[in-house]
Amino acid sequence: MNPFLKYINGTLCLAGKPLHPVAARFGTPVYIYSKEVINEKLLELRENFPDGTIFHYAVKANTNPQILKFIRSKKIGADVVSLGELKRVLKCGFKPNSIVFSGVGKSEEEIRFAIKKNILLNIECLSEALRVQKLATSLKKAARVSLRINPDVDADTHPYITTGFRENKFGMAQEELIEVSQKLSQSSCVIVEGLSFHIGSQRLSDRPYVDAFSKLSEVVNALKASHTHFKHINMGGGFGIPYQMSEKPILLSEIARAAKEFTRKWGLELHCEPGRYLLAQSGVLVTLIEYIKKTQAKNFAIVNTGMHHLARPALYGAFHNILPLKQGRGSIIRYEIVGPICESADAIGKGRDLHELNEGEFLAVCDVGAYGFVMASNYNLQPLPKEILV
Ligand SMILES: Cc1ncc(COP(=O)(O)O)c(C=O)c1O
Image 1 (cartoon, rainbow, N blue to C red):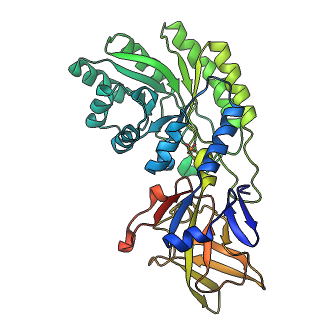
Image 2 (image 1 turned 135 degrees about the horizontal axis):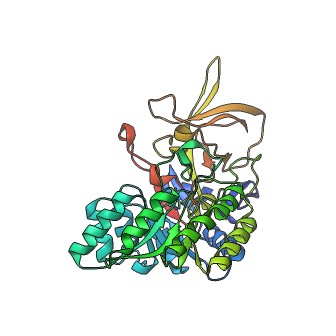
């Protein structure tokens, strides 16, 4: 599963670094991230995608300022979805021309701020295009935009994280997109720089990307025929990671091949917005076992983290591998790993077969570098976990 997590001399290590001393020093619950893993994942992306591909890290996956600064230092741009994210990436040193502002519900305040800072806006519908046009005119400043198409492909992922199917709220159907481009072409205040799509998150198959690229030729043809000039195609993110043994890693090379063919054919720059792929395997959430509770039906390991710190299991039924920091011995017992929150949904892992656990031991919840801490809350007025970058 996660190739960066291994036991060395009986101690769980992330990219070769033992986790136990970090948890013991800083206390739990604690998100521990590895720079080395982020760097490795970045190299994997760069090796697979053609030279000249422009990456914008999808900041929603993890907004930790140290991580943002590290990613920026690797000459990666940012994809943001709110004014909060936009202000944070600017503060972390991202250059305005390396930032894309996506999202279906941008407010007037958000659009005004983005236009003033010369940020590329990803337009998601006709009303938004008209709002951008109106605000750019009143500010007497050109707005840079790209148009987001909904390619209507089945991303074959959890329904909460599919975005490129016609029933989703994201992007425009071809007819609407052509109408928007025609309206904007009459305005000197809006410059269309690109076309974008994003088909969903946690994709493990290359098929939806290949399908999306083959569908896009039609819309590019129509735009070219109506003399809309644009220079890039942004394929979004969505590359998944294997959270479970049964899952196979995504074949980035196949996606890159389809993207390369497409960009060559139409003479376009390729942009890409990975989030989860870059960050997920770089992080673990280390937690302490407070109690072992045996009932007639189950064995519970009650830990000091839960759905308030890692929402994915309760929200999507997501699976995260759970490993003890000290390699287990003894008999195998089936556990429910649950948190302190007053909800039965508060389970981090259900039915996990682990060597016998003891109170006071540490467990690592794996692959939580993306969509982990960013979704954490103070529910039940619990404090937030710490974050440490090693
Ligand atoms: C427009 C856009 N780009 C990129 C991403 C990043 O997706 P992922 O973290 O799956 O790579 C998302 C996630 O929903 C998105 O909506």
